[in-house]
Length: 406
Image (cartoon, rainbow, N blue to C red):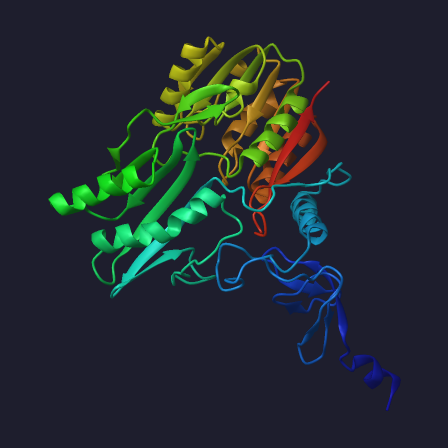
């Protein structure tokens, strides 16, 4: 046997990292599903678990598409978050950035979930879709959700059994509001007295904060004994049906703390893509809050006014009409919290504005890195990045970052 043939012979390999979709990867580029860093991948594809491979917390893993990384410990999960951010930055030739230890929200803290439901004969399935499939995984447990939301799944089967026709599906969104569970069911109709009474009886029996239906024309509240709110920055803000909210209160607190550090003692701040005011209501001084969702910005405006906060709310589509460099020139700091698409148009104006400090909160490292390059090229320093893992055991990575310009 020649030296070359011996060298080319396949051998067992060490899993050295996790790829973007959660598969384990060896140094030579071999991929293996359900592998953790430190596992040994044999020639035949079998795995020998290593020190970071742990038993999953949920009986539905890995079929359920809600989680991809329940088989790795927190150390490997945190490393995965950092590597995702470093990889995205490297694509845009940004290196040497201080990336802090990720903040991971504990299990059982998810306060907002979107599920699918489907009726099959007498059985009603409720859960997340199976990975890469439209098939609903019927949940018997969920260690990600807040216990109150998890406990609502079984009763919902009974309610949806009265509303869904056979082989029909529905969307279920649950949010923990100040008053309790805010439940929104979509793609169903409540026709007739029996269906209407079933909704009312269910809401009362389970002490819901609100029960809304979306029959194809937008959400309509069918039960709301008192206005539903969510407390942000110490202010009770009206919560529109289906409005965006950070996934965990723990993760929200970590993002707010990072944002306040990045902004510093600013007297005049612009909060762009402000939503319901997660950051605007936590900021010191005077704040301009701009948001494209009308319901959200009206809720923020009313809440800030009642609480006596110095927040000027503006309904504005920041993709089509970003604040210009001239409009931004008078601010001490800017907070950005765009959707997954990032804030390309707004960042171009920010880069030209010379605003001294920018706090950028992102749910997508790829678009964040693209926008960061624009700011860095304009002379901003990317001081640090704080990863935040609100979506425990998933490949979804969030972060807060601080930019400054002398």
